[in-house]
Image 1 (tube, rainbow, N blue to C red):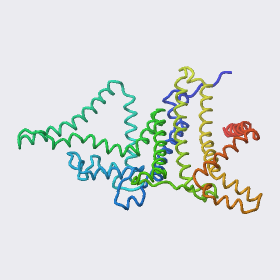
Image 2 (tube, rainbow, N blue to C red):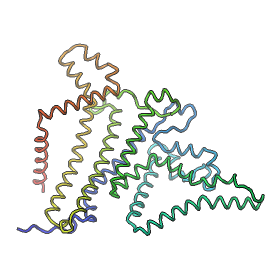
Image 3 (spheres, rainbow, N blue to C red):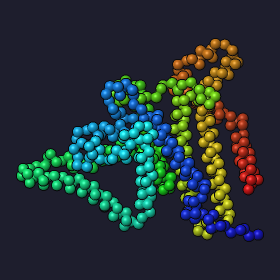
Image 4 (cartoon, one colour):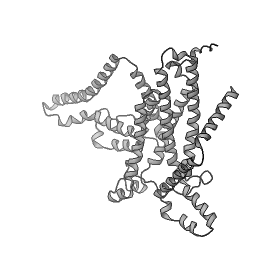
Length: 403
């Protein structure tokens, strides 16, 4: 019995696959995750210490770009450049969002990230001759930008006062440096977004890894700079530290605290972005490596569809499971104390629950570790592979009955 031929739009050729709804779904999920991660990161790690701002300081090394650009615009050495506006910035204020606050300041730079990501992907598919001329053109423009205003100013001044050493015109040579500084403050916030978009839609695993690593580095640096030992030794940093206590679980029926919810949201969004982006690249790489004859083979197409459909389901299920188990792990200490209170009925559990050591962050870490040990020990009691097999078999039967 011969199998029915595959429809042209269902073959495993790359142009066809990139229009599949499963691939587009994973790419949209990854894109949504990294944009939501930008908003969440700036909300948690963007504020400066209130007392620091009250002392007259307007910039601190927080995860926010407008304060850094405002600091650049106030520097006297940058306010006299030829291409700088009256505010001392080369980049237009409407593009940087410096006149806005909150999420409104991120809208235009975020739109520019999409535009530049598209231009980069267009550049990557050009031939080597076009790439070479593009690199040379950009280099030439930067050199001319630095040299031509300097030479024109010097020549004009020579016509007035005669030949002299052009020390007073050297500031025009540093205009590219000022632009680099402005792009640096923008890049602190938006470089991982640009890299993430290139990784998701340009199928670059390196760009995905770089974006995740950048966010992990920002979180680690913020934790280091706001550590009590560092802030006691070095004053004047201005960062707003996260509370040492994770707080009372008041959200979702006492499951998680607001601070833990913010941090868990960042972790889940980071995991969702990396997992969905890598899934797209992995599936497309597999299809590209297949022999050309196999890309239209019904059996290969069926297996590929099954793998991708299962991955879409697992993405939602596993991420939800990770979020739930992490929330349970963070509140495992309260769960243990509730059990002790029921069994003992005395005041010991209440006294322990009010212990400062148990409420501090490292107390939560110990509690989460105990939860993981308990779950790991359950593998000897609960046949997890059997349970997951039954769940997958049930999902497969539902799909067959609905088709």
